[in-house]
Each structure stands twice: as structure tokens, then as C-alpha cells.
Image (cartoon, rainbow, N blue to C red; front, side):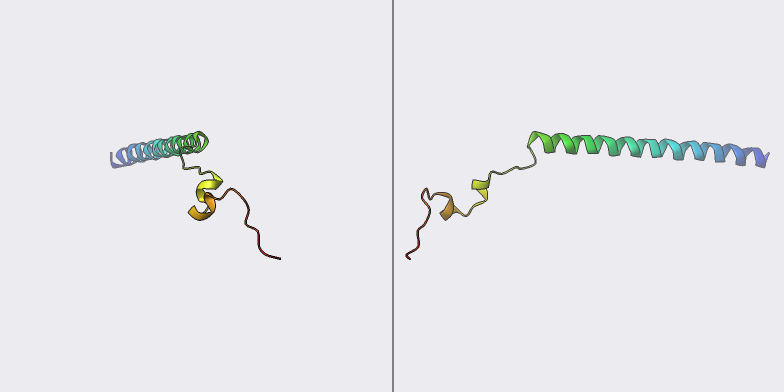
Amino acid sequence: MDCVIHIVLRVMMRRSICRLQEVVGMAAEIGTALFVAVRVSGLAGRRRRSQLAPPLLRHTTTPRRWPP
């Protein structure tokens, strides 16, 4: 009788591990899809080059000329 219980428990444990692996795989796929969607939509904080420049250089319209 103990042998039967042992076999049944091993089968149940194996199935549980397989299902857990499937759930983790699906969660990874969903996370990747969300990351790509946010990245493509531009919500990840894309900045224009002018926003990255220092404030003093951002407002100048003509290039600076140095004396010869």
C-alpha cells in the first residue's frame, strides 16, 4: 500500500512541476509582450535631443563664433 501511495505522490508532484513551469513560461511571455508594447508606444521616456541639452545651449539659435 505504501508503494502505491508513493507512486501516486510522485506522479502528482511531477504534474505540479510541469504545470508550474508552464505558468512561469506564460508569465515570462506576458512580461516580454508588455515590455515591448511599452517600448514601442514611447511610454518608456523617449526624449528629444533638445531636451537632453543643457538649458543655456537649448535656447541659442545661432552658433557661437570664436575670435580668430
